[in-house]
Image 1 (spheres, rainbow, N blue to C red):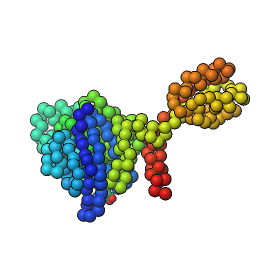
Image 2 (spheres, rainbow, N blue to C red):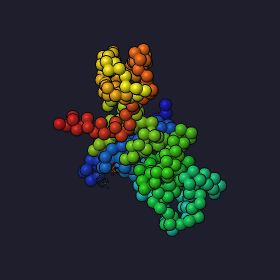
Image 3 (cartoon, protein in one colour):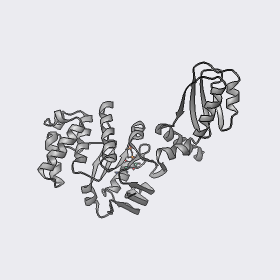
Length: 316
Ligand SMILES: Nc1ncnc2c1ncn2[C@@H]1O[C@H](COP(=O)(O)OP(=O)(O)OP(=O)(O)O)[C@@H](O)[C@H]1O
């Protein structure tokens, strides 16, 4: 797969304060790369170094094959960025903003009209397109800033808290758009967010930062395997199974633990998901009416919190 970004031992200091240290990661074409971490971890600083607004103090970095250290302007021309505070002209309408920024990106009028119309519609702003931005809500401004970031057809997008200030419906539209621009249009996205539920829906890869370094990274299933290697499965029965069945099932190969004996709902920890079919066969053969078997997959939020816990344990 094509790497859109590669960074090796990247570091950055603000006047002696080391905000990034030893950052090594890569982002592939079409990938949504979630950069997570507590306040002050260094997510925004990473974006600023990648698009050349800040110059790294050590390490190597390539963005779209360019060096952010001396080709920042070219990187910014080929990428889109959305920060927490939308960079828009308040006294202008949505269309006036888009025409202005489109012209700055050397787009012709027809392109601006076509792409502007498309994104204003996708972000549910077409009814507001001729209103001044100062009359917009925070979430509407953020959506317009996203339309602006996408207008010039960037190959890579840096989205820093893109759904900040949005209601759930608007946030859902942005999630759908992120999904579409990566999966259908092949653009890569670096997504910094504290909304883990949202990141889980759209990201292909997760990097967790703390104090300027990446402390854990992988696909969701890799991280899930790392923090919760066992499989948790919930069994629901039509009636409470015969009293000795739970003890027998708990002793079957691959079953690590069983909670809920004496009730019609059991929660089991299994070594692998392959344990499920023989377990169901055993229970059914012994007269238990299995209604459902639901594997529980740790959410990104659970994974994130567990990773933080693991780090605290290491420190103690
Ligand atoms: N202009 C600056 N001058 C000095 N220190 C800064 C500056 N900007 C950020 N920092 C510091 O660098 C560190 C990383 O900040 P950064 O904004 O990159 O974190 P973040 O992960 O984006 O945080 P948040 O989730 O709150 O947006 C923090 O300790 C912050 O205080």
